[in-house]
Length: 395
Image (cartoon, rainbow, N blue to C red):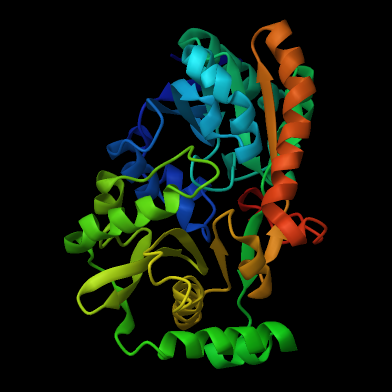
């Protein structure tokens, strides 16, 4: 499909590999490993949730100037993306009419990370309108009634705010991202720089781990042989998760093993030869991400495995010369104690039909705000921030 508007052209690609060589690397943020080409290739090879992927590509005079990744969900179970309170309210409906909980939905951005519109320069209002119109056109053709720009920080959403509002989209709060700025030269210097109480707590958790001589933490570049153990640990975490929009599988993890872009490393805790915890870490440029975690809850609390996996990831990121490391949108209390900032994120959403759009506009923002407050817990009043680092569009 190649609709044109003067020297503008939009095409919809089915794979990241269909982009001209070098395009993705030129447009993607250079310090966010979740936006490396390899992550999207791994997603396409796996079955982590969506029924398909698309890449909306905007060209000017034949040159790609912007790319917006899309995830197609033909029948997304609504209770997979809501909090526990909302799921309890939906229990009778799930039992009596489960089909009503299956929602055709189009996600714009990144299924696993912060949303971006990939562009090397700010787009003007006309280009923004073309992109929003193309998104809605694709949703109509694919019969995906609900459209969501997922987890966009304010600077990345700004170029699209006016056309989104004009097209009937409304904003709802997302869960904040977590980012730890790495200014220390060593892990010990990082610990010393923490406030007194978090510093004492961190040292106590390190001693708790060291009190279990049968446990050790290793850093692995090749971990394909451990995938069955890792997936069993990951399932323990997902069984306790409030939301399960995406569930990583064997194919996704296998595709990332030993990658150079992004550099993939597994921080893994062993008891003897058995993995009892892991944190998948990805690196690109001077950025790092602790992407997904798995835990054996039989040992996790007593040995403080969760915290020590994160400490090992911080040590690894500092050793790799990273300036920041991001973690998932869960467990805010320990991450704030580690020194992470909470980065404000938003969803922009709509429905193709007027009545469902009005219902969503009325119900979803307060429901998501409640879910956000519950997830943040004691940190619900913790000041969040917008991105202070310049967006990739401004570099």
